[in-house]
Structures are given as C-alpha cells and as structure tokens.
Amino acid sequence: MFDNLFSFFDRHQSFVLTTHEPPDADGLGAQLAFAAILRDRGKEYKIINASAIPVIFKFVDHDSVIEILDEKHHAFMEKSAIIVLDTSDEYHIGAMREVLKKAREVFIFDHHEPKPLAKLTGFADPTAASTTELAVELAQAVGLTLDPHTATAVYAGIVYDSGFFGYKKTTVRTFNAALKTIEWGADPHYVYMQLMESATGSALLLQKQALSTLEFHAGRKIAVLALHKEDFTIAGADFEEADGLVNIPLKVKDVEVSILIKEKSTGEVRCSLRSKGKVNVSKIAQGFGGGGHVTASGFRSAMNVEETLKKLLECMEGRVE
Image (spheres, rainbow, N blue to C red):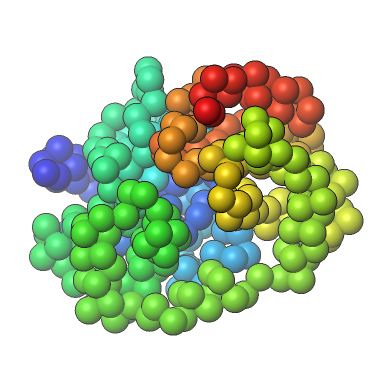
C-alpha cells in the first residue's frame, strides 16, 4: 500500500514536512505522526508551515516543534525532500510553494479528491476520512507505537476531519484508527474540550455576525453566510475563528448545501462549501480553482464577496433539486 512512500523515504536522509495554509488539526496531526515515523527511521526532519497555527489548534503542537517558514530554513530545504500533507494542491500551501523548486523531491500524502491536472504526486486515498487516519495505518505498517502526545494530536485530526465520526466518509477504518490512538495513550476528553469547548468570546460574537447575514436560496436548499472584513473587526476575531461556521446551516432539515464567504483584512476572499451528500461541492470548488472533498471543499476568489456569491449561485443552478 505504501511502497512508493517507503521508496521515497529510502532515497533521502533529510525531510521537510508541510501542510496547507492555514493548518488544521488533520494536517498538524499528520505532520507530527510523520515526524515520529521519520525519527524512528533515523532521518533528519523539520516541520515547517507557511503560517502560524490557529489558536484553536495550538494544543496539537504539545512540544512546540512546528515552525513558521523563514529565510533561515532555506539551507535545510535545499538538502531536503518535502512531504506535503493533507493537500495535493501546491497553491494551498502558501509561501511554501515558492520553496518546492529547491527541494530534492516532493511527495504528497493526502486523502482529498484528486484535482484535475494537479502537478504534485505521491500517495492519496480519497476513501479515507482524514490524512491522520492514513498516518495511523502507516505507523502500523512500520510497526511503530506513537507516544501519547503524538497519539493525541493524531486523534484530534481524525475526529476533526470526520466530524467526531459523523461525516459521510467515516468508516470502520476511521474507528479502528481512532481506537489505535487511544491504545497508544490519546486523550479523547482532552481533545473534545480543546476543539469544542475552548472557543474565545470573539469567536461567539463572530458567529452572531455571520448568522445575521443568513440567506436561503433554491427553496431553502442552499444557505449562505457572508463575513466582510469589518465583521471580524466588530467581533474582535481572527480570520481563522470563522472556521466551522459553515456547518451551522446544515442543521436545517431542508438545507443541502451551505456556503460561507469570508473576506480577510487584506481584501482576499475565501469560500467554504459544505454538502449533505447530494451535491458534490468538490467539483464546484474545482471550477473556481479550489478543491477538497465531495461534502467539504473550498476555494480562494479574486472577486469580492458579492461577485463571488453571484457566480457561485449561478454555478449551482440545476445542481440542487
């Protein structure tokens, strides 16, 4: 199953582990699992991302080993191979994309739907609920027992990307992977507290701002939330604190697709899409240069919030019945 990855390991001594921007629990947990595997194989490595870990996920990096890209890393990268975790799209790794050309070789390890014409290659299994689920299977394949802190980070990735075992891609594999992390010492209650009961007051105020913009389309089968940069200022919230808001409208029985469009302080617009399964939002996101899962995807937009929403709704005509 992992033969091409093992060959990649054997070809190099030094590695850089990176993930998408901003990093989430799945990408971070996978990085820490790979670090343990590389360490066990006597390899050199650094974990380097383009941006800082969002506040809600900082607990994952228990030993503060994950670094932010800086010029001081360039010499190490030039002698290293790069493993891109939890994305196959080079445009999703921020400034790390600029250093890919300096790497000796690049390998992706991912669980998202393949993006047409993607340039990066490696190992991808879209049937898995998370990249951390795959990382557990990899650790088992090499006979490695993860330490409790790493196991907890990996468990966090599994439950985050599987919606605490509620999303459609959750399978027996997902539960088996989670059980293995608990056998290794993962703390499920701690992870739940950190992910579900540690939000800031500003995040709650941002939710209030978002819900005030709620609109329904296509006979309430499409729900839209929109956040302008002023909304983040009013709530005193960071951009990453909008993560998860897109899931709220899915609580409505009739809603098939939920859309969250958010504007950064720089004016950059990002869109998150969620589906209950009838609509493949990955295909929609790919049409805008993004990607992801059948039920959870996203993209960046060069248009403003209103133009993005208009084009998106036009694209969705006929997809929701």
